Structures are given as C-alpha cells and as structure tokens.
Amino acid sequence: MSLDILALGYVGIGLAIAVGIAVTRGVPAVSDALLLVGLWPLWAPLVIAQRAGDGDQERVLLGALARAKTSPLAQILPDAETARVLAGRVREATQRLAD
Image (tube, rainbow, N blue to C red):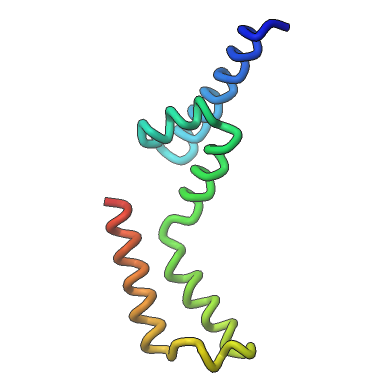
C-alpha cells in the first residue's frame, strides 16, 4: 500500500464525515468543513459535540445548580435570582456566538 492510496483514503473518510454532518446537522461553516476533511479524527468529535449542545447551556446550568443545592457546596452557590441572571447571561452569550 503506497502513501498516495493511504492519503486518498484518509481524505475520502474526511469527505464522507463532512457530507454526513452536512446531511444530518446542516451545512457546516467553511472552516469546519476544511478542518473536518483534513483533521477529521480530532475535529469531527468537536463539531458533533458543539452542534448537539446548542441551546442547552441554560437548562444544564440551572439543573446543575439545583442538584448541587443538596451538596456541601450549597453554601457557596448563588441564590435563585443570581442563578437566573447568570443563566440569562449564558443565553445572551450563546446568541452572540451564534451571530
């Protein structure tokens, strides 16, 4: 097996993953598509994890704070109002990142 065939297989797998992500999750950004083709073993899990978590940050934060209220950390956690303000800031930051 020559290096040319191995490189062609590597790029082919990267293209297949990029097409699969484009079909299932929408067309990725150009930079993500190029990184998927060239560095798919490292970049594909990051793109999949990023897309799967969109919009869930606020819910995850509030859920984690609610679960931690019964732990020894409860004394240093923010109160309910502060947690809502923090969750709002997380939502705003997520929207800015999406823009």
